[in-house]
Amino acid sequence: MDKFIIAKSKLFGAVEISGSKNAALPIMAATLLTEGRCVIKNVPCLRDITTMIKILEVLGKKITFNNNILVVESNKSKKYVAPYRLVKTMRASFCCLGPLLAKVKKAKVALPGGCVIGPRPVNLHIKGLTGLGANISVEKGYCQAEAKKLKGNNIYLGGPFGSSVLATANVMMAAVLAQGDTLIEHAACEPEISSLGQFLREMGADIEGFGTPLIKIKGKKSLNGCEFKVISDRIEAGTFIAVSLATGSDILIEQAVPGHLFSVFEVARKMGAKITVDNKNKQIKVKPPKKIKAVNITTLPYPGFPTDLQAQFMACLTKAKGISLINEKIYPDRFMHVAELNRMGALIQKTGPYAIIEGCKKLQGAEVQASDLRASAALVVAGLVAENSSKISRIYHIDRGYENIEDKLKKLGANIKRIK
Image 1 (spheres, rainbow, N blue to C red):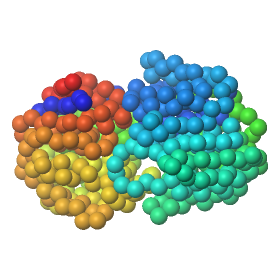
Image 2: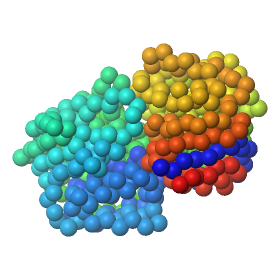
Image 3: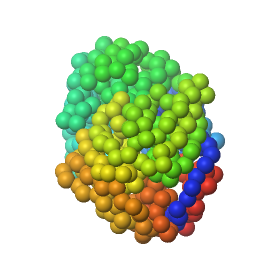
């Protein structure tokens, strides 16, 4: 397995944000709804994208992927089984369930894997698709579903921790080929859902309200292929804001969508940063404070502070003056990185869904290992400010969600190298 060796670094310059993994994956799954040719641009070259390509190929798609452009064509196969050997590595692969049901009328998709960040049940997916008329059972680790006919319905997708992004995506994709009208209440509002809605509309779907808690869909008999450009990755942009804050470095973030990051800007400004936004040129300029201020952060569904940035900002707050509190309301067990940050000298206590971070004078380089995608990014942030060098193992996690991250950091002046 590859490792990162990272040393304390002062950074400066500009970094360009890649396309959004979390937007691209459901869009790729949506190509199962059509036999037409789909050209998807600005797709990041990542491990998760490669996995989804393999899943689509197993399901009968012919795919080419070059220079961040993905071309999906159909060989008119009616395969409907997404195998465990592929699905186990990535939760977003479960998004194949809805489009397979809508197009092929049956699906067998392995229960998903992905990062170890606590329980993430699929009950809302099953509830929503059952509401459209599907018969679903879970047997031997697979979700098996069939439907002679999907019918539009009113679907409520509220859960104990708010709305579900992937459940909303699954129900949207199934409903666009269902008979009649569907109303999705308490739908996820994330930009990735809006991007999927725009893609479905480009395919000919009659859909409105995406980006709001109420999505209205009129079912169609068929959809066409189309061309589409994936939005930039707001989580990658937020990660580089954390890098700027932690290292005390002025960084210009390019090819971002500032409108997707208002809650992150709010937290960064409370920490003392000066954030300058240029919406026209898709730029965010971050000027960090000399000393980070302690803050309280609560993760919430969009437009709240993203759970996917919790770990990276926790790494920043280890350098803050005072005591900070993080309340994780999306995945209460998402604190696997706490032990590794403490190995580097951080002073963090976990109590239930809370983490209490006491600012420390120095972090010390250490050998640590990544437990999940965003935790690995947090360890990179910590490694960039720690005294002496750090060795981060199991970085295949970071390869799932960050395109060429070490090259981007090197361009900013970071002392980082990958060891094969």
